[in-house]
Length: 327
Image (tube, rainbow, N blue to C red; front, top):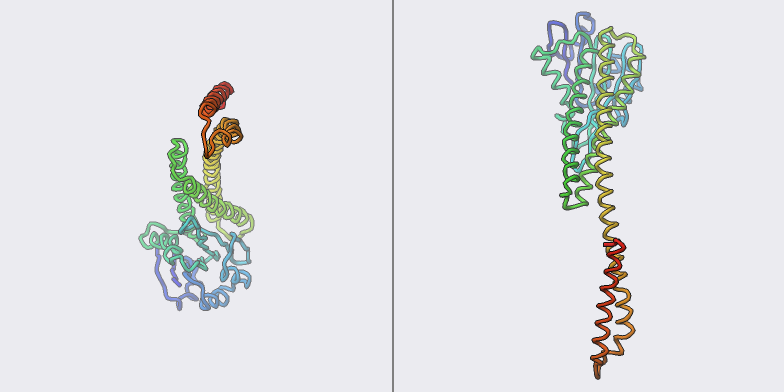
């Protein structure tokens, strides 16, 4: 785990042994970033910070939805960020946060074995780099969690922007009618839909969590509370944009399906016309053919008469079908 002391004038990595002394100070706060859960982390949260057993359990296990718990001296929030994997699968990268007046603890995971740890630490490492370079000087743990979660939201927005670009390309393909493999094209449509729906689900759940957090936290400074409201607004915006893209993609899909259904209907009508035209001819040849062409001899005059009759009948049926507007 990484321990940092954050104040208005200083951001410094500290050894874990300095934690008790740092918690006693009131000129800054502690940030502990936990890449992976282990027994040492659980002992620290339980012993030093007095975290509730239910919150420990939530941080230890995978949470499939966003959560918020209110405790006397801290707030527990679990959110997710998306990571697009292979074959359109979207991984839920969980970030658990323990937010107190003088500390912020961020816990990553549990992770799917195929997910690289660097992907899970993307947002916290980006914020840590901003701290080290002096571009960010949060005044409270709430300001620091605001920076981290805003980075999560920004990455979600970038993903929605990329998916919107793909939706635009799919729309161009449908409008220009250049798709060659319907099965592969449908796979692309539903892959983009799944990714958009996943981002929307994450953003919607997180917005509900922060809407609840704003109403139940009573130890956040005024600027910290304002930042939490801003996070709520950011998540609502991402969810709304993702929903609008989903609706647009649904329109593209319906247009594609309507055109495909129309093609199938026209093909069916043409097949029906062909069947109607060939049915009388087939009936004549079936009944009369065995009596006109036989092994011993062929009745040529009758054969010619039947052929002329069948051709004439076919032409009459074609003319009649044309007048009916069938082709």
